[in-house]
Length: 155
Image 1 (cartoon, rainbow, N blue to C red):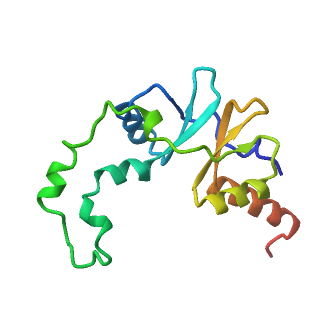
Image 2 (image 1 turned 90 degrees about the horizontal axis):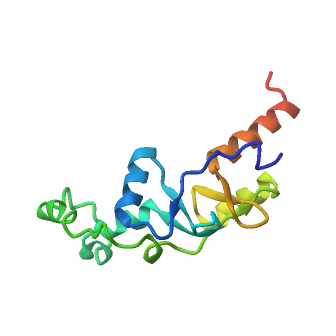
């Protein structure tokens, strides 16, 4: 069971020189939560997560309150947060170090990396660290279950 036959190709990505506004467009257009960041040669240099972008929109007090159950809405904060978002912010200033797997890794190896990193998607690179695809928990899980089912038929 290999990654190459189970990953999504091509992967949606963004260049490190792009801005947050462009990243937001990609998140919305493709309904994704992980955006690999590449340099001009296509080498993976980082990852931008939707959750990190959403964190920019959260009011500061959210990090100070232990229980948000009593808050039904954020009122005026919900109207102001979008105005404070700097869409010209470079992606390179928001990205995190890349967690990735190579296209030669086994599915279990990729599953272990996803589990350790607590990510939902994992960029896939070739030997030169060029982005070649992306694989998710769902892609890996379905492939593993399909293999299990072929060796253990359900009556």
